[in-house]
Length: 108
Image (cartoon, rainbow, N blue to C red; front, side, top):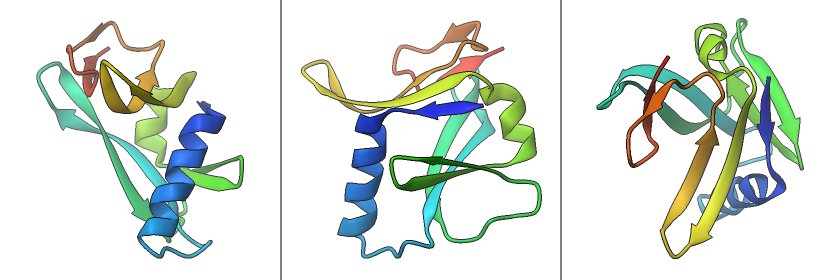
């Protein structure tokens, strides 16, 4: 469903450790309406797995994705970039037909 790169997993682990989050926590990845292109990605930490969640485990971290968001995220790669052109999580989403310049919103 979603592929988490080793770099992204490392940054997620670093942020969880910095905030004192336990091993029960994971990253919740959602798609919500909004942004300049129609949909936007939302990231947050969560320790609750819901009944309709898909749980992805990669490099020692867990990512929770609800069923509705999964429809928009199939085949997506979650990466992290710390380069000259900006720092942050990057979504390589093959379902996105258009994407805003900042990469935080998309349309299908």
